[in-house]
Length: 164
Image (cartoon, rainbow, N blue to C red):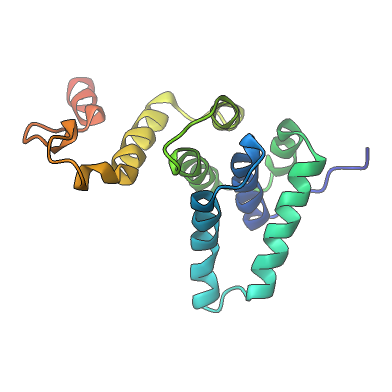
């Protein structure tokens, strides 16, 4: 196989998203919409053209078809800042849960990314809790939803109180 290319930070973001989107071998509408939303704001701001977004997306999906996820991790290892790593992690996690159905392969990808970049378990727990509540729109459809009670608190806040 040919030498794996080093990806720029924006290519790393889009490609990471593509791995999660294709984890179940199909791109669901919610997943595609999340990727369009992620990049669309840069088109609106004229930071990227529609053509650049199309190219980035096509290249990302082609990369996924050509390289295993572990090779992807090696290709981005030296090109990302800590903030970019955390942003990619948060976006991968959100894409994983966006359709309300987490499959094993999606979780494997997110876990592999987290381990590869040594993201602290506490950070992952906070990220998970915030993204779950952000994406749980059933809060607005079910008055009896467990998180709609007056006693709702993020579990990570309780842990922070005891760790302080």
